Structures are given as structure tokens and as C-alpha cells.
Length: 128
View 1: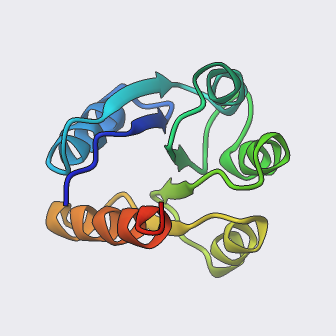
View 2 (view 1 turned 180 degrees about the vertical axis):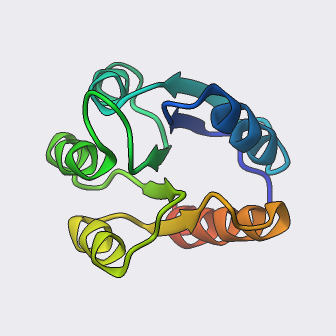
View 3 (view 1 turned 90 degrees about the horizontal axis):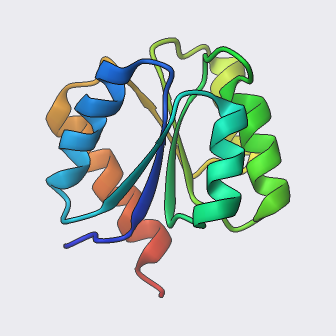
């Protein structure tokens, strides 16, 4: 499976964006757009209309849950995968209720992150 879509990667930590970007490149040749906070992410989404959003939960300026709410208002069909180093059940459930396609902990082994992203892409884009 080759994924060559546009991905909006949202995380306030540059090293995390670089790490996730390397994982994404194992799926194909995606175009990566980066944002360091939720406010910038919503603006980038409106401007770039990406196929997939990888969204950190805990960020300055605007957190991932509020950003997810706004993205779903802009585009109810956007595909968002939440990324976090903290995974309390309430936050996971809230993100999924708001429309997130998946939820991945950042401390998950690289091959498992890759498998989860691959499965999300298959689930969300195979009908297109």
C-alpha cells in the first residue's frame, strides 16, 4: 500500500514532527505540512486541505481536542489521528466521539505506529 497524500502534522515539538515524518515516509511519498499548535493547524487545514491530519493533544496556544472540534466544523469528513504522550481514557473517548479516526501514543514502538497509520489509511481511504 502506497500513500502519497498530503499530511498535516501538528505537534509543538519539532523532534516529534521529524520522527513521525520519517515514519510517514515509509508509507509512500506523502507531502508533509507542519504546524506547531492547534490555531496554526486549523489555518493550515483551511489553506491546504490535507488528506490526513496527525494531531498532538497537548500543545500551547490551542490544544488538540479544541483543534479537533474546529477541524470537524471546517470539514466533518477530515481524517484525524490523535497523537499523545498521555492517554487517559476520558481524553481518548472524547477524541473518538468528536470524530478522530484513531488514537496513537507517541511512546508506541515505531513499527506499531507504522502499522496503526497504515490500517487507518486503509480504513479511511480504501473506498475512494
